[in-house]
Image 1: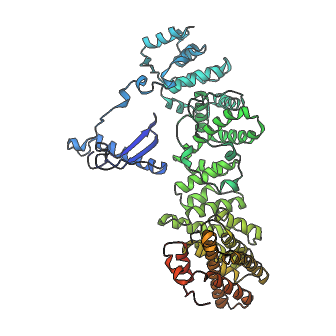
Image 2 (image 1 turned 30 degrees about the vertical axis):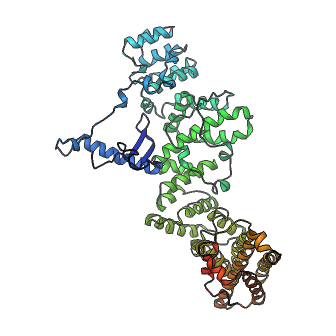
Length: 588
């Protein structure tokens, strides 16, 4: 495969050939760190699945030698076949390496039922193991069983034995044979499916003590029971809950029960998850570890199968779930897999109108600043649907909730001003002028927070500059009483700055505080200039006098640093603030 797939990728698969993880190497394997340092970078899961599809096509093409040339370079050769290495060497510390389950009292009955052969009904584990070895059904501590799972799930078997223990041994056999055997189980196996649901619920509700051999990387209880509003403002890497692996602390009986239930009755498994999350608050802490581990395994199974492409129907089930975290995960999947607007709307169909709006807000927020053309098209379509779904009359509270949802509780208001004003706020205000006051309160309020902040603020024209510009634009249109209130806050900031700036030795002993006061004064001056500009083009005369007084005071304080000193700060935060003002500072 020389020249086709360079040896800079390491892909790790499970026994079903699903990619678990991938890594990109900066240098070839054969040269490693010979000339340059070796940098190993994890491959994101969404790219990993695409890369896997690509390399599988290459392997298929070159292993078949479709070119017919017979050339070594045109054939795929396995350099190292891990399958020929015994499991004992590969997994010396893995529980799969042991066959201790053969010594369980139920093992002879389970194996006898699997093969429909009563000769396996021995009472001793050693005899049973010897029988299996004699029939070449055990090799290198691995089971070589043909598929006999359907013999073990009949209603008669379930009714006539202690099937819980029977299933626990059966699941150990599945884990050590070919776990694809479970795919012959169908929804019509009602007795078996009902047993699995009861077994899983009993396991979750049990007071079992979990012995963990490895740390668990799962979702904490507070997230599983969190509100949707809170979740929509969090950052979660979905790769944390994707993978076909069994979590530490989960028995094979529970692991395969979860997998089979999702395969046959996904709605029922989803209901079990929803009800058990509700029960999280009702149980004592000593039971929570077991409960959380199983719930995390259910979550991992559901999310992995949906993420890996089980269609829009199952994704729609997630978005319509009664559990907020499941809804949130569905949004993460749609965002990370770049679903089209049409697919998103199909998945979200029939949601409650208010919930529909706020989930749509989250998706719009995620793709608003995307550069690629496909996301830009989806953004435009989703924005049209967003305005169509909005109530005809919005209350100020509802308007604030929309802006909160679109800006991560205002945290990203400074970075998402341009599209937010043009595509959301202005169309809404054009329909209802009374909401101008509400919009002004949001933007000027955020500006005042920044002006009062003790933290370093890097003034960027595209962020803080845009926020300032929109605040001035809205301020020039809102009611005079509200304008006066906002100007009062700025007067307070200037009054505070004045005390600091004129304090003896302020620019030397407390330079950082002095510098911040000078800077915020210049910022207020810039805001006043923008307000005057919008007053002039909108032909508004209200409160020009108050604004002029504030502008004069702000300019006077800012000029405690000379113009030449201001201009020396070409790389610091003041540099873009000067560009934003765009007029000589000597003019007032």
